[in-house]
Image (cartoon, rainbow, N blue to C red):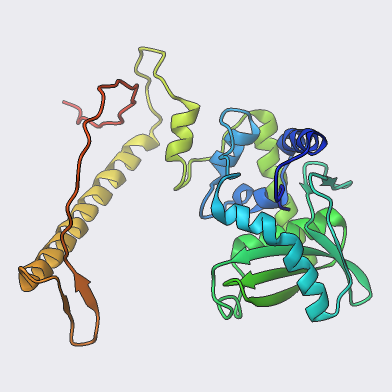
Length: 304
């Protein structure tokens, strides 16, 4: 659900503040994929840290893609209703719907509709992906979000409505399968139990910045004994670093070969039409004031 599409009135600002606070008390639709480890942009540890109050969620209010989605949501919903001949009711901003059976699950619905004689949810997206990008399957995160919202609303059907590239409107109808619903509910329940117990999930690919926020300083001047598996992970880490070096070295050789072929020219074209550019430009550097900052560096030293 879009947050807003303009300057908030005092009442709207207060409603938004309450909404943001209440969102900390469970898993919302936009959280669901992260909670079950299927979000490529935010892993479970990051979400856990946000819900546990250890870090603040990223502020996307000034992100232009988010702003575009907010401003266009109502228009996309109204166009969808007219184009597909469906009667929809747009959602109320900053209104949280909580599941009665699973109180840790909630959603802020973009809209609802009548579909095949039943009430159904509508999820609205504004996307840069081309119109045929989702013909075979939706992004897994959107499938999970839509299923989560169907569970919260207590309905069996839902539609993801997407405006592709600013001009191609597509609707993707889905039916909630009981087995998938139970799997999702169980996975989200386990995640929320970790939040309630204060037990963090394992780090994921996006956890580096999260850990900086969780542990910004080494306030304790001590060295701890790591678990037995740490030696196995250390060996794996060294193998991966060696493989990465081989890849980086080979990448550098290939790029240097292209630069050698191009020489003093501005670029080149392969027999199959791939273009490579190696152009120069003037760069002006401004002097910067001296400053200090606190940085934690993670290093490795082999045991003697």
